[in-house]
Length: 335
Image (cartoon, rainbow, N blue to C red; front, side, top):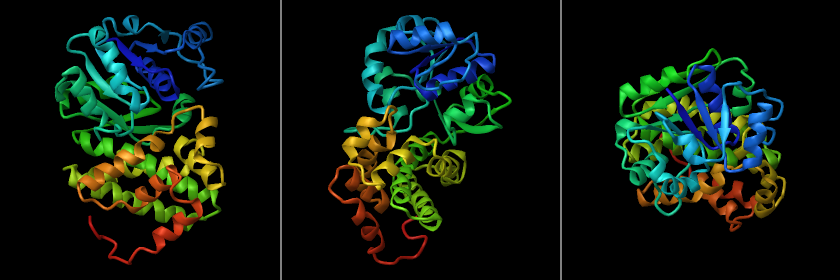
């Protein structure tokens, strides 16, 4: 059963490897012909996964029609804010009845849509054809086949979830199923914002107590927003919630944490963005996450401070004082 992986960045390339290792033929689409040619010739993606030898069965193309032709599964691994544009451009190329799998972790600017909602709106696909993969999945470790990484395949359709579970199950990549698409997507989007906050704190020289506080209270913000949108609260205690949050906030491999660290050390946000070669989704999703929360009457103080810092309306030095000056509340306030 052929899969098309649309996006040749670090996570898209890694997931294409996982599919091939699981026995699912995968074609990787990338927008740059030079990088695609290198992947095919050297079996390596030197821009995003240098030193990793990709499976010989993994082929790449810069032609979206070639990648999508005959695909039963379409894996979407483009930056979240470009998803709608790409899908609209590919609309006439999408095979009828193909399943869509989102690897993206973000909230769309303007619409405040989750990625599965964008997919459904543009393609007309029903929930039985849409799935989300989310969890503590640091791409470099998975590409190196280090130990075992676990993830969640979330879909409203249990048959699709179980099918995809088999198609990406390898000795080093263990997928679980979950029907809570909303919760899994919110976990992936919000944890990137909290990782920016943790990175800022680390860059400022704060210690483990501060980091633990931000992770824990960030989880509370995630759960509050999820409750307002009808997500299953158990999801946030699982791989797509706490698991992903811990990995992203603690690992130096995390793009969002690294982005935050550079800000915490005093680099202007615009300079950090200029030197960052990979998209830190939290930088783009923080504002739509906050706007969604405000529309629902949900308090997310950490997210609000991150938005202020990212828009350079709040100085990094003010961020901590804004949080600690809030009135004391019960720990389970608002949950």
